[in-house]
Image 1 (spheres, rainbow, N blue to C red):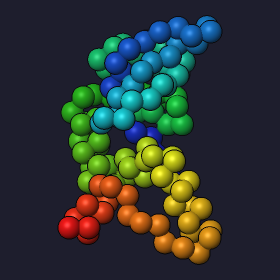
Image 2: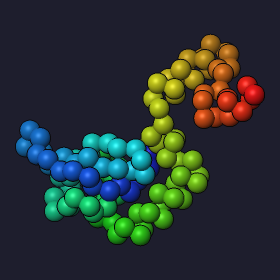
Image 3: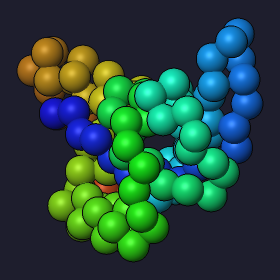
Length: 111
């Protein structure tokens, strides 16, 4: 599933003629293209889809949306560890079940 996720602009720079930003999505930081919202400033929030800021968003709406996405587990689904996801897919294709990752109850299960 692809989501448009709100994020806060931490830093802006021009890279090879393209306006780029470092954006915080509730603790996950990614690089985002600002060409569709050229007047976006550091400290503002934007809706981001597939690496492109699409629209400015007010802070309260951004915080509410991020909290809801986190509660539903959508942030992990969207920004989860790609190495962990690839390993899980390999296990699934091999017909095995991987051990739970740390943070998925593995620590509690071992105790």
